[in-house]
Each structure stands twice: as structure tokens, then as C-alpha cells.
Image 1 (cartoon, rainbow, N blue to C red):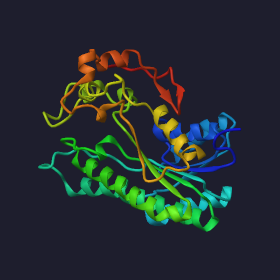
Image 2 (cartoon, rainbow, N blue to C red):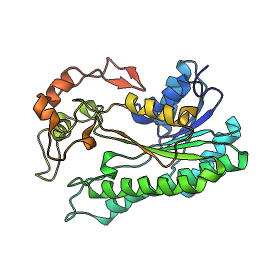
Image 3 (cartoon, helix red, strand yellow):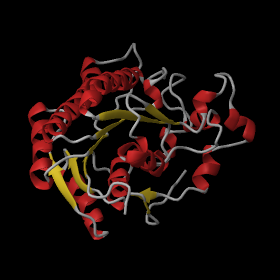
Image 4 (spheres, rainbow, N blue to C red):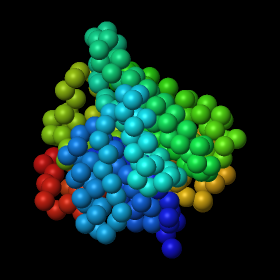
Length: 297
């Protein structure tokens, strides 16, 4: 029997990377999965993949940063499956600007997507869990950027740091209802190497205030980038009874980066390079190998 057998998971986000892989991992462990996304084609593609594997999945379409939509998406999941045991959220869009060039539109979009979206998905999922008497697990994706500053990315820093502390507060409130709230903070993701052209990652194209892929790699002792399967494995743990005494916690998936002295560049010392990592990388979608994707780095 799977670690999530007979449970229902609501996944906000449907990309073939983090959210789609996590939905796949939940399903492999026995959960029935509702996949919500603002783009119908994304939700349907993810669900088609899951159903093709023989799993029970349902697409939901709406914008979880809109209160009416967030409430409706949760209600639709409950109406179809009868309950929600697990919620996983990866809502939001990143906008990169220096502080001096920040525009209010992108600043507000960053906070609205990550922070307001995180609040609304938590609010309505927790209400449903409380009404149904479910001892549930709520999981949000934060980022290492929510723990420290990154030049040229301060709106993202602020939104993710806010989400991190919101989740801590929510964990304290919801503990009395036996609802756990935890977060996962990954570092640079490997799918960026095939999602974006190399010139956007190395060398720097936005001036000295922007970190390159090599900058990240040099700070990671384990000498590789995070991948969606790493996150899905952590999410399954947080969704399962194995973490039943954990709430208000953040799992750092940074390859040991934050454990070392700030001035140490272990990847550089070991001779790691983005080119070498990319050369040995196997692209994945929804957690499965995707040989049709090429990495031109």
C-alpha cells in the first residue's frame, strides 16, 4: 500500500516540472489528485499524463490568486472527491528588477501571486479540512531566496520571505485542528537549463547585480542543481504520516549551501561547472525521462 493511499491531494500548479512531478509522485503513492491551474491546457495535460499511468486525477481551471476562484477550486475538489487531505501550492510568477528600476505593477504582481495566492489556497483548503474533520497537510513551495537576499530579485525575496512566515503563523493557528503547514525551499532548479537559453543563465546579461547559474553551482557542496524529483520526494514525506509531528517547518533543498561559510565556494573548489552538469543532465517532465528535450548549453 502506498504512503498516501486513499488520500486526496489538491495541487495548485500543473507545469511538467515542480507541480506536475509532485502530482505524479502523490498519485504513485496512492493519492487521488485534483490539479488546478489558471491555464486549462496545462491542467488537462498534467491530468492526461496521470490518467495515462492509470491514476485517478481531475483537472480544475481557475486563478487561485483570485478569492472567488480559490474558493471555487477547493469546493470543486471536495465535490468530486469528498475531501482534501493534502494541499500543495506552487502559485506565482517571478519578476526581476533592481530596486532602483522596480515598477509597482511587477512588485504588486509578485506579492499578489506568491503571498496572496498562498494565503487564499491555505484559507479555503484549511476551511474544507476543518469542516470535514480532516487532519491534513498543507505544503507550500518557498525558495532559498525567501531566506536571503539576491541582488536584482528583491520582489521575489520579499514575496517568498512573506510566504515563509505566513506559513509559520498558519501552522500555529491550524495545529489545534490537526492541520500541518510546512514549506520546501529549493535552490536553482535544473529544468531552467532546458527551459531557457544558455545566454540567460551564463554569462550575466543584466549586469553585475544578477547571479549566473555558475554562481549558484559554486556555492552548492553537492555539486549539482535541485530537480523536481527532489521536491516531489520531500512533498510526499511532508504529506505522509512520516512527518506527522512536523509543522511550521521548512525543508531546505540546497545541496548543503546554507550550511557552509558564506565566503566558501565549494563547487568552484571541486571544479564543478554548469557546462559539465548540463552535459550529464537527463531532462524530465512530470518526473519521467523526456528524451525529446535537448539541452543546448
